[in-house]
Length: 388
Image 1 (cartoon, rainbow, N blue to C red):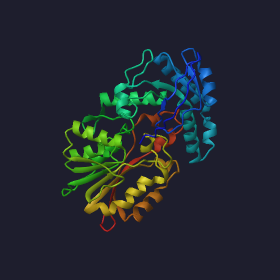
Image 2 (cartoon, one colour):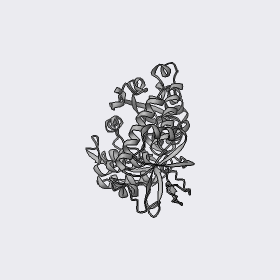
Image 3 (cartoon, one colour):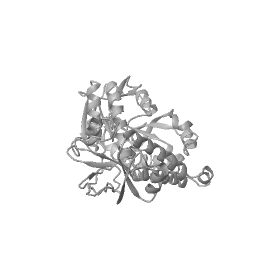
Image 4 (spheres, helix red, strand yellow):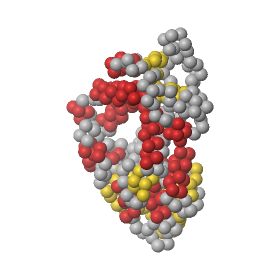
């Protein structure tokens, strides 16, 4: 869900002119910088860094490509400047080390988010060599800002444009044998090992009705639909529901998948429940992070607690979860097993897969060591009243 703050400000242009009544868009919920300066291609990386480090927002004017280049150069310099040394990190135990890494990344993102760009009514960019961003911004924000002139972080605009390219071209999913079409604000399945597990797990012959909890792009619901199930796919995120419906329609599966606005499990009882909750406890700073971080494992524990009463006799709840939190010492295996037991569930089986994404091989990533040890599991859970 986007957090949008609208404010009025006056931006000096150095020649006595001013521009008032600009809207402010930030998916992270960041406030608009209190001090603003106009930045142009004459600005050096050093000058931009000094201003950003002092909390000054920079409103980019001039050539779009030059602004994008400045953003990339500032990001590289800022990352090198603020990244803790390997020795300093390795001296910290988990999970303190992980919290230090997250804090550094959040501070870097916040400073980069103060390099701003203005968007004209009709979602136009009035900068030389700017792309046509109108369709991408319309998909991201709907009609919210269409008639307005507003300011947004350049990092967010680049994310919107990148997501629209994914949507336009499609994202191939090997397990489906087809592409899906993500959109901004909806987490895309760039890791596919858990999708393969869902296709490998056995379905019982009498199973007909399933529920996909927190459907996102709808990819899990579509995988199970290709295996013959009818599903209710739930999500609280409107963009996710639109995305899932679009994907199901494109793949000819909309007759088997019903999309609903629902927190956790939809009403009724099902043969199969499937959920891929956020894998790490923590505050999510934006819509994409909400698919990775969840304060106190609220969704994970909520799904487990409610699952038993939504299962038909002989049904199962499939929980997709990485053990990354265990390696970071943010959660123990014993805690997870205790939550399963307290929910009146038992482990019928577990399918494991090692991730194959490139990050696990990136030695510059301070989390490379734990990523190499990570295992993604599909937990097949049944009611504890039934013998696994």
